[in-house]
Length: 260
Image (cartoon, rainbow, N blue to C red; front, side, top):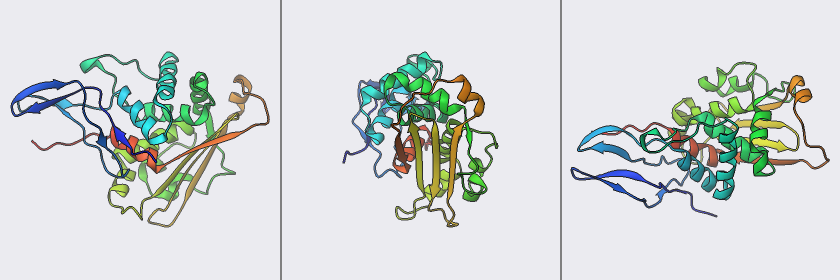
């Protein structure tokens, strides 16, 4: 069992009133997963001028550590998403791209739904075109969770949109508030599944205070079935991540508040 952690390649720190740049920082522990990682501030003297928000490198490294997927594989998938226009290109310094819940959702979808890195962009595009399979989903969909931001999703949303909303909710929304007020034993259970070679996803939330469970399944639309190529063959694989992946990534993306 690996020990989750977060390495920052470069950050600014203050030592008294002096500003110094450090080339590397020791790992910041993010386990247990319900603990929020601290993030550095960028300061000029003693006046805060901004936060060091999540960069592409931080998102990739955190995703690698919590999923157990080798960092080189995650980096390769991210590179292919950038090339396909599915993630903003990153600059340097203050121009570095800031990661959003949608960026994180696309990267996780690529990991879950790709049998190999060169299929990452295609997997994300396929899963973005899915719609809810009401016959296989729980009644009232995410409404039963009583999590307002998830319940507000449109009836025609797809897997990637739902995963982005889930991460956003766990970052700064209603799910974050629920997690913050829960003990380890009472944590909501989150499961996100994706299948290959076909295109089928599932998001399941259980262990809620109201005792209800939401399970929403996603399948391709008829239009996407006729316009996209599906790998053929009898083999089907499924991959799953849980709250032990979703919550640390959401925490990484959450805006920090600092005391003066």
